[in-house]
Length: 68
Image 1: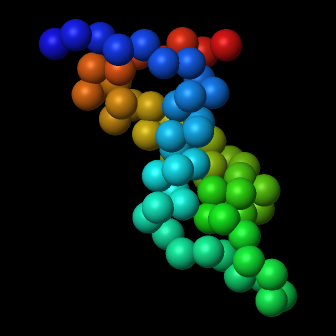
Image 2 (image 1 turned 120 degrees about the vertical axis):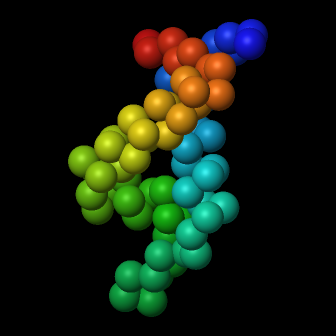
Image 3 (image 1 turned 120 degrees about the horizontal axis):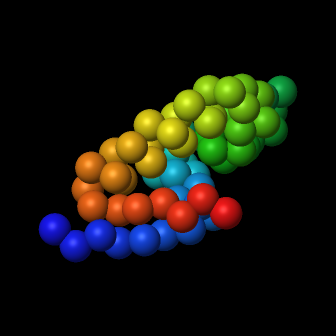
């Protein structure tokens, strides 16, 4: 299997896209926010843990993350 390298910022962008595709908009006091932004701002620890899990799944699929 060929290893594909991506930067951490590319992986973060893909993670945000995945969250935004999988979950509906978050509504807070009548305002709507992208799920990725709501999670990142409201629970940064859960966001980072989810990102770590996402990177692990990428590794299993032959990707290597170049952490800046």
